[in-house]
Structures are given as C-alpha cells and as structure tokens.
Length: 241
Image (cartoon, rainbow, N blue to C red; front, top):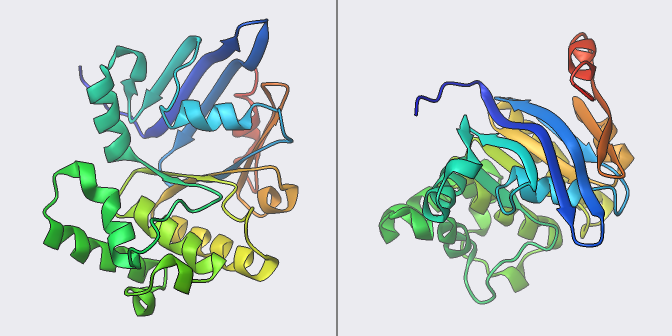
C-alpha cells in the first residue's frame, strides 16, 4: 500500500455505538494536519473521550474510516496497529502514570521499551526529551520528589521520546493548580512551534480558546470547528461534510 498524506489523522463518517442504542460518536469527519495545535473540547459525556480513543487507535469505530499517517487502521493486524501507534502517537494523561521509585530518566526511557532501543540509548534520548520540557536539572528525581507540574512535564517527555507525529494530551492540566497548568500549556505551545502536532482533549473552554483550532463536541457530534485567523472558513466547511 502506498501512503502519502500531510494529514496525521483522518476520520471519515466515524461512528462509535454501544449496546442499548448509545452512540458516542455520530458520523464524525475530522482531519488533523501536520503541525497543527488544536483542542477537542466538550462537556462530560459529549464524546470527546471516545474521540481520543479512536484518534489514538486505542479503539476502533463501529463504522466509518480512521487513517493514521495515511494508514487505514481497519486494515491492520493488532501487532501492526501497535507498531503504528508506537511510532506515530504519544499520549499524555491527566494523572501522569509515572512509576514510583524510578527517576525521571527511567520513567521517560520506558516510553521506548517496545521500540527495540538499547538501554543506554533509551536513557540518552530520555535526557534529551527532559531537556525539551525544561527538566534536565531534575533527571535523577523520583515522582515523589517532583511537583504536579513537573510530573506532567515528565509525562510529556515520555510521550515525546519516541518522536511521534502526534501528541494526544487528555486533560493535561486537569490535576494541576493554575500556575502549573499555565506552564504546561506554555510548554505545549513551544513544542508545537518546534514542529510537534498536538491535540488537547479538554472540557475547559478557556484552554480551548487559547489554541489556534477548536473542535467542539456535543452529543457525539462536532458542532463547530474553527480556527483563529484566516483559515477558519476552510475549517468550518468540513463540519457535517
């Protein structure tokens, strides 16, 4: 199969249904292009968490098509899908999921465990990733020695260490105080400016409004898709297409 696409993620008529007539996603159409910084925003129960799972290939749609880096995920075996996910997608979660008793370097290096990278190189790349998130001075610290904001930055470094095309950040400031949350969002802007494609899943309209693109969900559907600046019109045309 030949793959050539500037799109990192493409969803076409993606639906996710559950027994009992529950439709978490309803014919969703969305394209995320290389280098974008966007929010998927909506209240609890709107479908944004299901959207995260589908975009991250953690779950497959009931109907419709999902492509990651041009590959139709429905055509991939579980092993190939896992390899695609490991190569192209990094995940950041609200509650960090760091291993207690392991320092920042080893927590970040664990992001390369299944990539066949030797331990020495894993640790070297982990230190480089920690420097990107401005934590090179905290490499030897364990999670209990780090603040909440620092833990989230370690988690971001772990997501980045494999150099993914897309970073999916699920409520990245949800467990942080305001000041730490602002630092994390500033960091995500910096990472995007250096070329990382980032999608932030959030219920927080203030965070969403600070990003260049806002994809708003309600009842499993995209109700608006807008960009700051001149590209907003071309973006909103895709809603409901």
